Length: 510
Image 1 (cartoon, rainbow, N blue to C red):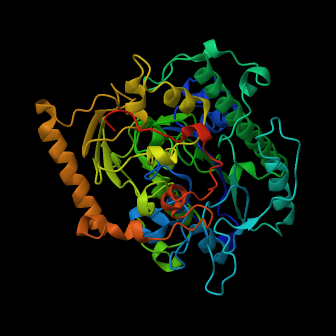
Image 2: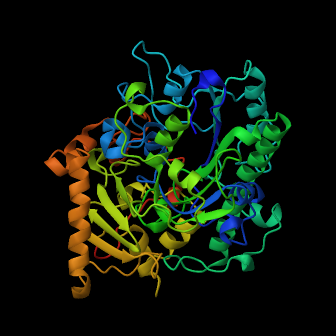
């Protein structure tokens, strides 16, 4: 695997990433209320990964990790949401372009944030944009980008047999949704949903919200299916590595932008007819998003140290591709690291909510460094790190109703400094074992391992310099310094939440 591009044997790369989709929301994983035949095909003709995790579950930092092969705490400003991407960090698409790859993208790319070259020009971190072709979307809130037609235009622009790398970044299932579209346009039935996460009340409006989310996943999948057909028609599918995943968890309370199991556990399927042994396998190795870039660099026949990219903490997945094994392939792939800093604004001084964590086996340990802060943003500014939605509204509107307070507390309340969960028995992460006497030794082992690895990766938070992440400027001019501007009476852009999300009066005990 991995001849040089000059020999025209390096694989093409189609990287397909949905926007806000949690594991296991694809039919290949047995979720009946989401139909994803294209994802299922990639899994059946390649590998279905059951333990893939994004180290920082939010759009911009997730994509920064993918592009650089580094964890977000190694990326300075790019650890945050809405940053200015540091010029010093080269990305895999740039390395591939220098090596002779034809590189392009459509839809949502690296975003949101600002990326400039040293000359002040726009830096296309995912390659040349292809967004010209439009289509009539199935709902008012789905993008009119004809992703597959733009991929076809990209293929037509390629000269000769140069290998290509294409980034298909759907804007779905990012909010907002057209309410009841899953039922009325997707012919879905709320009864199809086998279970609602225990941290939400089981209401018809919440099931409807989940089906609208599923309908948008299916839109992403349909374009992926068209792209696979295009590759077959062009005779390119055999030597194209197709990677299908999502950037972070579903845009619902306690999931997107948080660091729990549903936040960070991602769907992942990879096919490559010429390069994957024994297709149809299911692999249980832990995969981090930092592993993608070193995989692509190796398959392009390049040496990482010679690309000009900063050192990676990721590990190429080629050992899994060639192994032919199901289940656990490489025993060393037994854990992943998690973390976050500032996502959305809404706290004083644009402070973030710093977390680091580790998942080893079935245990998740989380360290919340600032438990005095609100994890999803302050109540008076609308909990801005949770998108507005029918689900969020149900929880907030009923937060003082009898028997409902615990839903508010689980989704929006403050958290202890340490959390420990058995994510096999408790995937909703509701039973914190951090203070359980039976788990003290395990907790300490996980914490020690986490801190050791973070120090090895020069995480500023391990050396008393975690404040740097709060000091990096939030680059959206319309919403930076949100808390103080809003509290002083300025009319702020709050298009991603609902007006009713803002608490005029705090709950008793807040």
